[in-house]
Image (cartoon, rainbow, N blue to C red; front, top):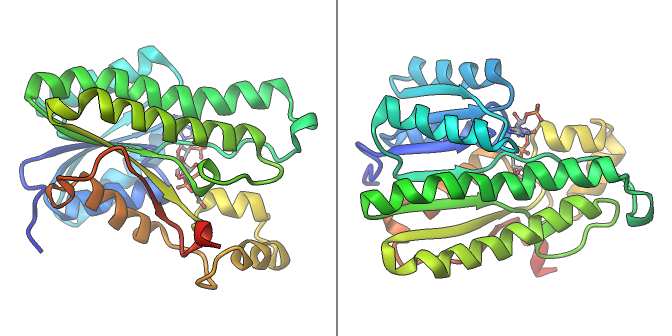
Amino acid sequence: MTDTFDGKVVLVTGAGSGIGRASAQLFAKRGARVVVADVKGEQAKETVNTIEQRGGEAIATHTDVSSPAEVAAMVQRALAAYGRIDCAFNNAGIEGEMAPTAQCSEANWDRTIAVNLKGVWLCMKAEIPVMLEQGGGAIVNCASVAGLVGFAGLPAYCASKGGIVQLTKTAALEYAQQGIRVNALCPGVIHTPMVDRLTGEEAEAESQFTALEPVGRMGTPEEMAQAAVWLCSDEASYVTGHPFAADGGFVAA
Ligand code: NAP
């Protein structure tokens, strides 16, 4: 495969764990210089260490994507280090607390929307001017199958992810003629620390989650990384505004 990311700069949020970490590692393996952002700064540094150990190039930034000031600082750090941002995988997200709609607390609603939905908007708001200045770019926002179908017990999460899908389509239309592609990745059930928190790593809960997947297993962070990297790559040059389900058939059911 051509290393289409040679010389490119890719920003990945939530890259200290799970899907974000695997994506940062794959972007680096494909030749990109990677800006690894996470609210857990130490975990971001660990991701950078794994990239450097394999001969790649990356920097870490401690960023809470729900903070406008921290997102602006993240983009400034990327520009100071590498001078440009070609691609962004706005992946950071939280599951929030599980409770049906009538029991969802206001605090859970506000924090989940602030990180997942406002965070993606803040990132795009900071990234798009840089990409316009450069003459183009590619953005992938991490939504979920929970942005395409309902998921009982996660009202704020589903609302945030559905919002990301619509925000993605809107931004794709707005910047299509200026060379910026904007897509959403909609993972199914992926075996990461987030899912371990939801299942409590209990066998019965895990098999209930697995049963949601027509392929009969959870996906891996590395499989999501392949999808994110492809959507950012020049190989996806005619793909924009698309909610891309990488979900083992979840939404086909
Ligand atoms: P993960 O292992 O928990 O990784 C998410 C990373 O993002 C963590 O390091 C987390 O830190 C960080 N983060 C949380 N809030 C942040 C903030 N405000 N600013 C910056 N970073 C923040 O979860 P994952 O499964 O890889 O999830 C990645 C994305 O995929 C999320 O958007 C998630 O909604 C989406 N997704 C996951 C699945 C799945 O089955 N795993 C399915 C569909 C969609 P903390 O550990 O401190 O929270």
